[in-house]
Length: 130
Image (cartoon, rainbow, N blue to C red; front, side, top):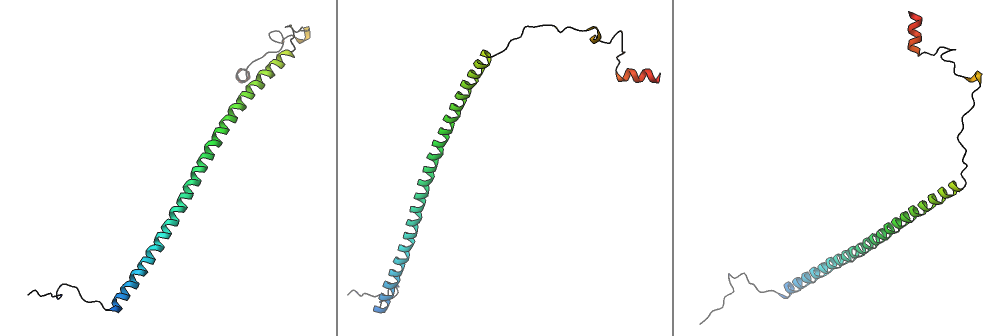
């Protein structure tokens, strides 16, 4: 005859109260885990939105950089055209004067060597102290 013994196996009989308690504890744990999952889902959704916003900002920055570069190139081209036109207009309206020598009066001639003695300060000071 086979005898079934539950003694020493760690198994014991649950009462209805124990079963209800375990059921309620399991339900509470499920609810807690669902709340955790909802929180993580919300975090994932927020992070996804943040990533989408950052990608959109990156695209905006890229487009803005391209527009700025194009504007700078266009400004450089316009400046070159302006300088070329300005040079052309300046050349068209330039006044040219023939080279000439200024007539020097007898009174305007240089004073050296016949008139005023010109020396450096050091030479003048050395001559005065000697």
